[in-house]
Image 1: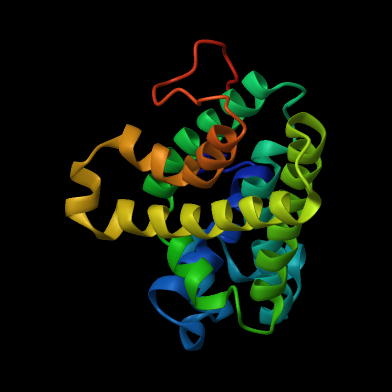
Image 2: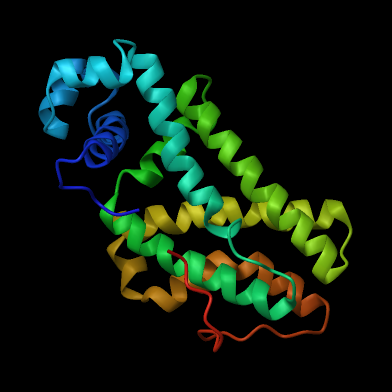
Length: 214
Protein backbone atom coordinates (compact mmCIF):
# COMPACT_ATOMS: atom_id res chain seq x y z
CA UNK A 1 0.00 0.00 0.00
CA UNK A 2 1.97 2.99 -1.24
CA UNK A 3 1.35 6.69 -1.60
CA UNK A 4 -1.14 7.30 -4.40
CA UNK A 5 -0.58 10.09 -6.92
CA UNK A 6 -2.71 8.97 -9.89
CA UNK A 7 -6.17 10.00 -10.96
CA UNK A 8 -8.01 6.70 -11.22
CA UNK A 9 -10.94 6.18 -8.87
CA UNK A 10 -8.84 3.79 -6.78
CA UNK A 11 -6.03 6.36 -6.54
CA UNK A 12 -8.42 9.10 -5.44
CA UNK A 13 -10.11 6.89 -2.85
CA UNK A 14 -6.75 5.95 -1.39
CA UNK A 15 -5.63 9.58 -1.24
CA UNK A 16 -8.81 10.54 0.59
CA UNK A 17 -8.40 7.65 3.07
CA UNK A 18 -4.83 8.62 3.84
CA UNK A 19 -5.55 12.34 3.97
CA UNK A 20 -8.39 11.89 6.47
CA UNK A 21 -6.00 10.26 8.94
CA UNK A 22 -3.17 12.67 8.15
CA UNK A 23 -5.40 15.65 8.96
CA UNK A 24 -6.60 14.00 12.18
CA UNK A 25 -3.04 13.27 13.31
CA UNK A 26 -1.30 16.46 12.27
CA UNK A 27 -4.01 19.12 12.37
CA UNK A 28 -6.81 17.83 14.60
CA UNK A 29 -10.46 16.93 14.16
CA UNK A 30 -11.56 20.56 13.88
CA UNK A 31 -9.70 20.80 10.56
CA UNK A 32 -11.35 17.73 9.06
CA UNK A 33 -13.92 19.37 6.80
CA UNK A 34 -15.01 18.30 3.34
CA UNK A 35 -13.52 21.46 1.81
CA UNK A 36 -10.13 21.02 3.47
CA UNK A 37 -10.09 17.30 2.76
CA UNK A 38 -10.88 17.87 -0.92
CA UNK A 39 -8.06 20.40 -1.24
CA UNK A 40 -5.49 18.29 0.58
CA UNK A 41 -6.35 15.07 -1.29
CA UNK A 42 -6.57 16.83 -4.68
CA UNK A 43 -10.15 15.85 -5.47
CA UNK A 44 -13.35 17.87 -5.70
CA UNK A 45 -15.98 18.28 -3.03
CA UNK A 46 -18.70 16.82 -5.30
CA UNK A 47 -16.51 13.75 -5.89
CA UNK A 48 -16.17 13.18 -2.13
CA UNK A 49 -19.93 13.58 -1.64
CA UNK A 50 -20.59 11.09 -4.44
CA UNK A 51 -18.12 8.46 -3.19
CA UNK A 52 -18.37 8.85 0.58
CA UNK A 53 -21.39 10.99 1.40
CA UNK A 54 -21.37 14.06 3.62
CA UNK A 55 -20.68 12.41 6.99
CA UNK A 56 -17.27 13.18 8.49
CA UNK A 57 -17.83 10.37 11.00
CA UNK A 58 -18.37 7.87 8.18
CA UNK A 59 -15.21 9.11 6.45
CA UNK A 60 -13.23 8.64 9.64
CA UNK A 61 -14.63 5.15 10.14
CA UNK A 62 -13.94 4.08 6.56
CA UNK A 63 -10.41 5.47 6.51
CA UNK A 64 -9.57 4.01 9.90
CA UNK A 65 -10.77 0.54 8.86
CA UNK A 66 -8.88 0.50 5.57
CA UNK A 67 -5.53 1.65 6.93
CA UNK A 68 -5.76 -0.36 10.18
CA UNK A 69 -6.67 -3.52 8.30
CA UNK A 70 -3.68 -3.07 6.02
CA UNK A 71 -1.36 -3.38 9.01
CA UNK A 72 -3.39 -6.12 10.68
CA UNK A 73 -3.45 -8.30 7.59
CA UNK A 74 0.32 -8.05 7.06
CA UNK A 75 0.68 -11.17 9.21
CA UNK A 76 -2.58 -12.81 8.20
CA UNK A 77 -1.95 -13.31 4.50
CA UNK A 78 1.18 -15.45 4.87
CA UNK A 79 1.47 -19.00 6.18
CA UNK A 80 3.14 -19.52 9.54
CA UNK A 81 3.15 -23.30 9.86
CA UNK A 82 6.57 -23.66 11.44
CA UNK A 83 8.87 -21.75 13.75
CA UNK A 84 11.01 -20.73 10.80
CA UNK A 85 8.01 -19.37 8.92
CA UNK A 86 6.89 -17.46 12.02
CA UNK A 87 10.28 -15.78 12.32
CA UNK A 88 10.44 -14.96 8.62
CA UNK A 89 6.94 -13.54 8.30
CA UNK A 90 7.19 -11.41 11.44
CA UNK A 91 10.66 -10.17 10.55
CA UNK A 92 9.58 -9.12 7.04
CA UNK A 93 6.32 -7.59 8.29
CA UNK A 94 8.18 -5.39 10.76
CA UNK A 95 10.76 -4.42 8.14
CA UNK A 96 7.94 -3.37 5.82
CA UNK A 97 6.24 -1.43 8.60
CA UNK A 98 9.29 0.86 8.77
CA UNK A 99 8.88 1.59 5.06
CA UNK A 100 5.19 2.25 5.63
CA UNK A 101 5.70 4.67 8.51
CA UNK A 102 8.20 6.63 6.44
CA UNK A 103 5.45 7.08 3.82
CA UNK A 104 2.77 7.76 6.45
CA UNK A 105 4.47 9.40 9.45
CA UNK A 106 1.03 10.10 10.94
CA UNK A 107 0.38 6.38 11.63
CA UNK A 108 1.93 6.25 15.14
CA UNK A 109 0.25 9.55 16.06
CA UNK A 110 -3.13 8.14 15.05
CA UNK A 111 -2.43 5.00 17.06
CA UNK A 112 -1.46 6.77 20.27
CA UNK A 113 -4.10 9.50 19.97
CA UNK A 114 -7.03 7.25 19.13
CA UNK A 115 -6.39 3.63 20.17
CA UNK A 116 -7.98 4.10 23.59
CA UNK A 117 -10.63 6.63 22.57
CA UNK A 118 -14.24 5.87 21.68
CA UNK A 119 -15.31 6.63 18.14
CA UNK A 120 -14.82 5.30 14.61
CA UNK A 121 -11.03 5.59 14.37
CA UNK A 122 -10.45 4.06 17.80
CA UNK A 123 -12.90 1.28 16.96
CA UNK A 124 -11.01 0.55 13.74
CA UNK A 125 -7.66 0.41 15.53
CA UNK A 126 -8.98 -1.92 18.22
CA UNK A 127 -10.61 -4.19 15.62
CA UNK A 128 -7.31 -4.39 13.72
CA UNK A 129 -5.44 -5.19 16.93
CA UNK A 130 -7.88 -8.03 17.57
CA UNK A 131 -7.33 -9.45 14.07
CA UNK A 132 -3.57 -9.24 14.53
CA UNK A 133 -3.57 -10.72 18.03
CA UNK A 134 -6.01 -13.54 17.20
CA UNK A 135 -3.83 -14.58 14.29
CA UNK A 136 -0.65 -14.62 16.36
CA UNK A 137 -2.27 -16.35 19.34
CA UNK A 138 -3.54 -19.10 17.05
CA UNK A 139 -0.10 -19.53 15.48
CA UNK A 140 1.84 -19.42 18.76
CA UNK A 141 -0.46 -21.98 20.36
CA UNK A 142 -0.26 -24.32 17.37
CA UNK A 143 3.40 -23.96 16.44
CA UNK A 144 5.02 -23.31 19.81
CA UNK A 145 2.52 -25.26 21.90
CA UNK A 146 2.28 -22.49 24.47
CA UNK A 147 -0.75 -21.81 26.65
CA UNK A 148 -3.25 -19.31 25.28
CA UNK A 149 -2.69 -16.70 28.07
CA UNK A 150 1.04 -16.66 27.33
CA UNK A 151 0.40 -16.41 23.58
CA UNK A 152 -1.99 -13.51 24.18
CA UNK A 153 0.54 -11.71 26.36
CA UNK A 154 3.27 -12.06 23.75
CA UNK A 155 1.00 -10.92 20.89
CA UNK A 156 -0.27 -7.88 22.81
CA UNK A 157 3.26 -6.91 23.87
CA UNK A 158 4.35 -7.05 20.24
CA UNK A 159 1.55 -4.66 19.24
CA UNK A 160 2.49 -2.13 21.92
CA UNK A 161 6.22 -2.33 21.26
CA UNK A 162 5.60 -2.11 17.49
CA UNK A 163 3.66 1.13 18.00
CA UNK A 164 6.34 2.61 20.26
CA UNK A 165 9.12 1.66 17.83
CA UNK A 166 7.21 3.13 14.87
CA UNK A 167 6.79 6.40 16.77
CA UNK A 168 10.45 6.50 17.77
CA UNK A 169 11.56 5.67 14.21
CA UNK A 170 9.94 8.89 12.96
CA UNK A 171 10.19 11.23 15.92
CA UNK A 172 13.36 10.21 17.79
CA UNK A 173 16.54 10.75 15.78
CA UNK A 174 18.69 8.95 18.37
CA UNK A 175 16.54 5.84 18.07
CA UNK A 176 16.70 5.95 14.28
CA UNK A 177 20.48 6.17 14.41
CA UNK A 178 20.58 2.65 15.85
CA UNK A 179 19.42 1.42 12.43
CA UNK A 180 16.59 -0.63 10.95
CA UNK A 181 17.85 -3.96 12.26
CA UNK A 182 17.81 -2.73 15.85
CA UNK A 183 14.32 -1.34 15.41
CA UNK A 184 13.03 -4.63 14.02
CA UNK A 185 14.69 -6.60 16.82
CA UNK A 186 12.98 -4.32 19.35
CA UNK A 187 9.60 -5.04 17.75
CA UNK A 188 10.36 -8.76 17.80
CA UNK A 189 11.65 -8.82 21.38
CA UNK A 190 8.59 -10.46 23.04
CA UNK A 191 8.60 -13.15 20.35
CA UNK A 192 12.37 -13.66 20.69
CA UNK A 193 12.01 -14.08 24.46
CA UNK A 194 9.22 -16.62 24.00
CA UNK A 195 11.27 -18.52 21.44
CA UNK A 196 14.36 -18.49 23.66
CA UNK A 197 12.36 -19.75 26.66
CA UNK A 198 11.59 -22.86 24.63
CA UNK A 199 15.29 -23.44 23.95
CA UNK A 200 15.01 -22.53 20.27
CA UNK A 201 17.21 -19.44 19.89
CA UNK A 202 15.98 -16.93 17.33
CA UNK A 203 18.55 -15.47 14.94
CA UNK A 204 19.26 -11.78 15.44
CA UNK A 205 19.82 -11.19 11.73
CA UNK A 206 17.60 -11.30 8.68
CA UNK A 207 16.14 -14.75 7.91
CA UNK A 208 17.35 -16.66 4.89
CA UNK A 209 14.02 -17.78 3.55
CA UNK A 210 11.88 -15.32 1.61
CA UNK A 211 8.69 -14.14 3.24
CA UNK A 212 8.05 -11.01 1.23
CA UNK A 213 5.29 -8.76 2.51
CA UNK A 214 3.62 -6.92 -0.32
